[in-house]
Length: 106
Image 1 (tube, rainbow, N blue to C red):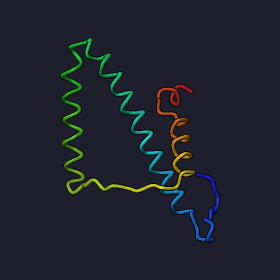
Image 2: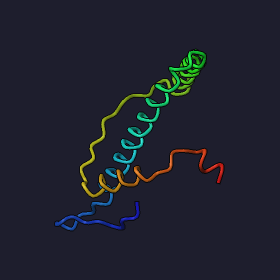
Image 3: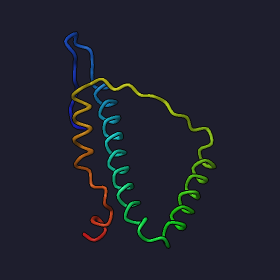
């Protein structure tokens, strides 16, 4: 998120809108990538009936722990309107390494 200070045509700072847009785009794209990976892994695991009960139990345990730790979580919409920030956040998320096995082995 190295973009320096940004100003619009009136001289007002756009740094805050850039950062918000960057973070929204980054989080959204990472979520898309994780969802795609989760879907493909689930499809692979459905071929092995022995793993599904274990995964289902783990999924329930995670949901229960989240609810216990964060009982008042609510969804809140975010508006991101800086096109440069949106593009930069999406690009950064596309290059982010999500496979921890590669970082551990290296």
